[in-house]
Image (tube, rainbow, N blue to C red; front, top):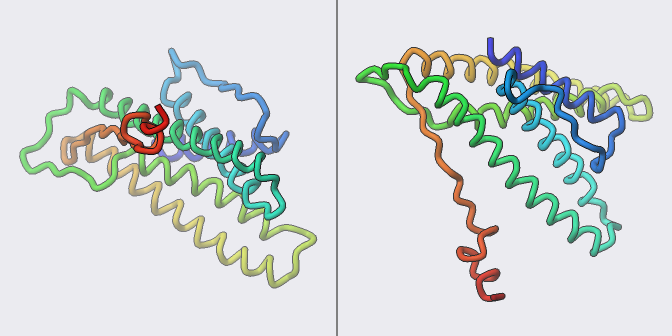
Length: 202
């Protein structure tokens, strides 16, 4: 199943990141674009999410230097754009893979494309990893660990449900029961012409 591969790669990424646990560490994708395109896209997607997860932790430090915080906010903005781009690349992969499928007359479009479901699955992998850390943290109270263990069980159940839904959606698309499109996000706040603040700086 596709979700088995995705969850395995996401776990691989998260464990690799936490060897150094440093947002500035170099990125090295072990998958080859020519022969393992989907794996390469999934690995890249989760790496972006993992680094951004830790950016979001750092910027919430109440004692952070404002200059550092502004620089980090710019990195988060860039990361969000990379994240969106990767979603579009992954959806384009599935669109191309299924371009010869005969769409059934009564086929319907899903509210969420495959890659946006995969985006949620990647974030969920990070939640599972970090909630497990909290549930087993030796310097935490028993109450804290117990509460986190309860939350972890919910997250694991969510992962099963989301994985199943993604696999079903991909199967529906491959059989023509669903069809998909790739919509560009058309983010406006990064565009010099569409953001009035940036436009007025010219």
